[in-house]
Image (cartoon, rainbow, N blue to C red; front, side, top):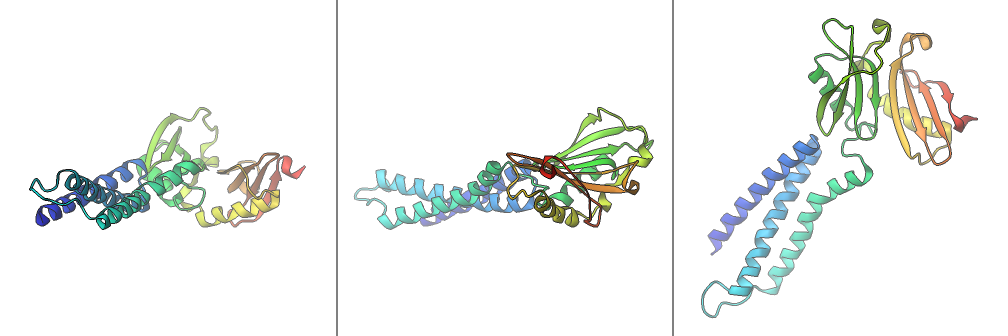
Length: 254
């Protein structure tokens, strides 16, 4: 009985790890989720085997006369393992879904991954606009090799996708384009609390970032615009690449 149970546990753990890791890769594409889901689902499957084995033994015994139901301590251990397994495998996904941020470039944890993913898929890192939203990244990519047209690319859940031509094609691509990999993403993240403080918004309901070159103002270099919204006001705070505030716009400053 014992070797058979150990074999089942080993196979169940292995299957859970593989299924959990593969699911996280398909859904999020993020290594931290892959590890958590793999371990969590592995423990959950392991627990399921322990529980079902205990139930089977409790109802039918070992198909031998006089077999005793599983001891109470086994049920307690199985219950604790079931809760731990479910918690480890479900909590990260539920928390991310509840906040709407399975892939959160605003915090900085996925910025490099998103920008690198788009650049690799598109075959270029030249853009006319880069927008970071709570759940995805948009980039207006300058199509190589002619560099005369713009396509919009989206990065979400670990995948970059070309969503088609930009609705409004720029008229002066050379003056509006820049290298999105040259942006200091740590500085972009640091601009957010500065913008919130300037707008007197402690808990904005929406935050997103736009990076683009202004061909007419600000020295024609990329600027970072932090867009904020709360229940009462909206605000846009524009920064240069070093974090200096250039402009303050919106009802929050009226």
